[in-house]
Amino acid sequence: MSTPTPQGHPQRWLILAVICLAQLTVLLDNTVLNVAIPSLTSELHAATSDIQWMINAYSLVQSGLLLTAGSAADRYGRKKMLLAGLALFGAGSLVAGLADSTGQLIAARAGMGVGGALLLTTTLAVVMQIFTPEEHPKAIGVWSAVSALGFATGPLIGGFVLNHFWWGAIFLINLPVAALGLAAVVALVPESKNPQGDRPDLLGALLSTIGMASLVFAIISGPAHGWTSARVLVTAAVAVVVLGAFAYYESRIPYPMLDMHFFRDRRFTGAVSGAVLIAFGMGGSLFLLTQHLQFVLGYGPLEAGLRTAPLALSVVALNFSGLTARWTVKLGAPVSITLGMVLMSGGLASIATLSEHGYAGTLLGLLLIGGGMAVASPAMAHAIMSAIPPAKAGVGAGVNGTLAEFGNGLGVAVLGAVLNSRFAALVPVAATSLPAALASAHSAEERRQVTHAFSSGLETSQLVGAVAVLLGGLLAAVLLRRAERAGEKTDAEVAVAR
Image 1 (cartoon, rainbow, N blue to C red):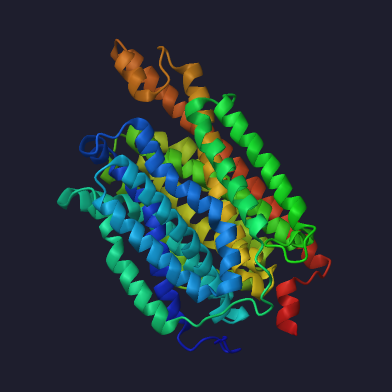
Image 2: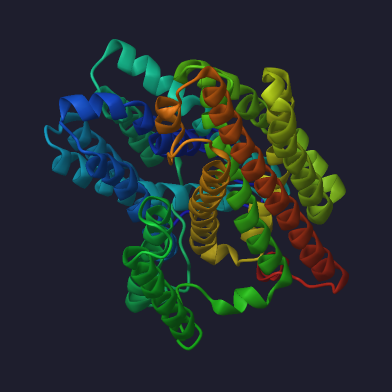
């Protein structure tokens, strides 16, 4: 088994480019399908429930399997799991691109979710193995920037492909990337795994998968079916019971998939708390941003996509140049996270309060959010990963990915509910959505009031997101600062010192 040298793997930057390409494909698939919904509705005669399952099958499977995928990578080999993830994702993309029924497409999306879970966990775990500890901040910064790039380019790539080809092409374009990734991983990526070879935690894997999938399903179902509906309450109860059983079981076995002692480390708990709140605020707010650009400012889907690009470009520029990595090393994790969260919170507040007057306020907000994400997100991911022994890097990546999925889903659901509640209270006609309210309006004045009500709902939601992000930054910074003052050493630092 090959292991990285203290100087890092000699081809580490080339390897990073390869795994980032694989990761980008997975992230694009989270957003690109939204652009194809009209085509799928007409060509596959898909009902609204079918469309929801096409989108949700991928996210449910992926979020449910992240911890299990990370644990499997640690035990059986991260290179093996990276290859398996690319193969499964490519095969699922082929089936999805050639599907001629909604059932086939939903099944293919679920298969792609399995591959996506393996890819998202193993890519970050490999980064932690091939780079030296001094290089981790910059490498994780590049890895994090790919997430922003996927958010910005997904709708643009989807729109371009659909303008020239049929809907299945949005999946088939994954095939050459998967093939290139397979060849590059075989040739370049060294194998690494937990040298202790712990026994498989099959029950823990089952409990975590059922618990997280149930939790995400409840969050997804809330806005459409009502938070007090039997569907939501039952699945939420299942999630609480199963995840509670998972935590109890993991704390009492000698070979846990997720060592619950990690939560005694204030660096780990600080980073975890901040990561959930940053994902909550940012996931929900960016979801609302696309609606704001289209419904309030009047841009089309492609125009709206282009106008969100400054956010991703600022993240990519700051992280690819290594500027944020140098700032993080110089300022320390607590200050870096606080600075990033304050910038993001200010950006969300700018969008909420200034963007109604035009794109300038939105642009300012996007640049502030991008700068904040470039500083805070890598620092948060690095704090989580550094609190976990290198042998458990896959589990650490699984925790990081699970927090992002959970926070994003919860943010979309909760901030969406805030928007709908505010809109319903202000709208002058009987309707639950903006298109329906505009259709029911009988005069120009009523239509103006409807638009204003929607804009007011968006403003309130964005401000709630801004507060969540700010609180997340302050909480994470306080816990991390206390850990530093107490002189706590993470398990990872102890292992490196040895």
